[in-house]
Image (cartoon, rainbow, N blue to C red):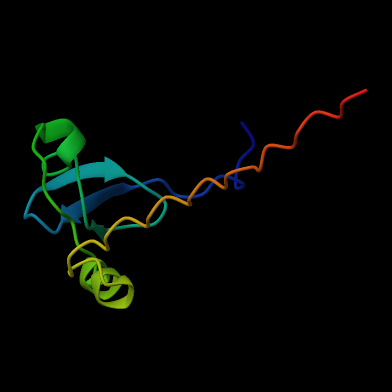
Length: 89
């Protein structure tokens, strides 16, 4: 490998919002994440809502999802066709 063209790749501490932390290697340095393997629903097998800055509440407020669902629209009525008498010969 050529000398002097590769970036530094030192150990970096990663901290999760749940309190879990681990060490890996990165050119970025130490950083924080919102979700890690210790708290992600896919890995833990639990269902939990991860609401980033109230986005779910804003959606419900905007589109009225917190209100009762609207009644289903009535089906359109089928029009009756008038029978035309067959032309007699």
